[in-house]
Structures are given as structure tokens and as C-alpha cells.
Picture 1 (cartoon, one colour):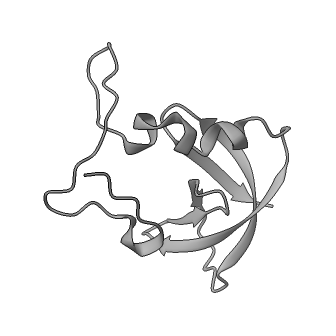
Picture 2 (cartoon, rainbow, N blue to C red):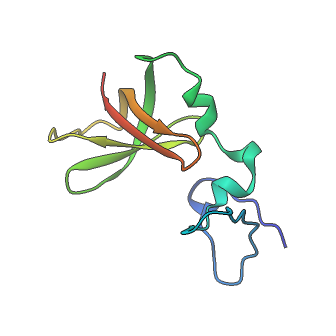
Length: 108
């Protein structure tokens, strides 16, 4: 059973079937992003020239950072002490690990 959901319904539910890619090295973590390389939005961002400004939407506030989602589905971490009341922010990618799906951001 292959369930394709988007937005808030994209979370896995009990008894959902998923495809995973298991790397040859240990240790490993299951990653839905790695299972379908076509669905991985991070290589697209990795091809941008350094200093590119992206507009994203704040989707979650944590203790000292925010999670920012981009139009292509990628999410990144924006570390700041500022209280950002707005939902959209302009950011610069400071580091990226496309294989692991990790983005570090700073305010533009």
C-alpha cells in the first residue's frame, strides 16, 4: 500500500507501508527522503549559488530556532534569538547536507 499525502496529512500513520533505502555503512537511520530520490528537494537547493536568498514559511518554533519550509518541500533550521512573529522569512542557506536533508539558515 503506497499512500501519498501532502501537507499536514504527510505524517506516517500506524500500519502505513513505506519504502526505505538502507545505506551500506553503519549506523543508519530510516529516511523517507532517501527512499525516493526524486522526492528529495535538497539537491535542488544545493545547486543554488552561495548567498542566494530564499523565501520560506515558518512552520514551527522551538526553544532557540525555527523550522522553515520552502515551496519545494525542503525544511531547514533557522537559529536566532529574535522573536519572529511573521510567517514568511527571507533566509540564506549557511550549510547544506543534501544526502541527509539538513539545511542550516540565517536571516537575510
